Amino acid sequence: MAKGPRYKVPRRRRREGKTNYYKRYRMIVSGHPRFIVRKTLNYIWVQVATARPEGDVIIAAAHSNELRKRFGWKAGTCNTSAAYLTGLLAALRALEKGVEYAVPDIGLHRPVKGALVFAAIKAANDAGLKVPMGGEVAPSEERIRGEHIASYAKILRENGLLEKRFSRYLANGLQPEDLPSHFEEVKNKILEAYKR
Image (cartoon, rainbow, N blue to C red):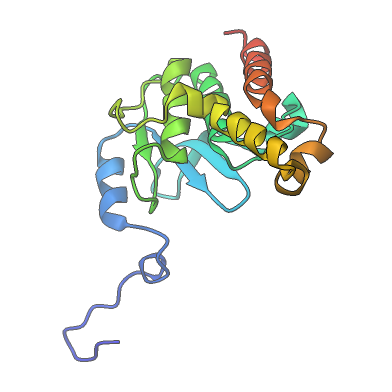
């Protein structure tokens, strides 16, 4: 660490690598709510929040584990399909609260084409919540529905490795080849729950 009388110690969350204060400042100055997408190893969080001097106020939120508990999702909770459904759920809740526009906040995640965070933002736009995003960075519809997983599972079934690679899917009662239809089923449940 640098020493000397002119050295300025960065803020704690910057030192820990949790917050980019320049980006946060730019989003807060815009005056619009933020569409926050955070990814962990097992889950995806999506929140719509506004900044206040005393701290952020969460307007609407969704967690990918809710997909299992409330809507019968049997696949993983940290894949592209789950990110889309979680973003859809959060966006529908935000629309109920009167939010029509939000600024995307992907935190410290790298903005890579087809990333999970963009699947959640695409879901928000599909739900009717305006969140600016370039069309070329969003994952394809086939990838969002999980067709790549279904085709991979077919290859593994031919080689006899399906039970080893997709043991959690099978334990939950879902054949990996049926993921696209299961995705549509859960998506329709979410839309029915919020009458869209």
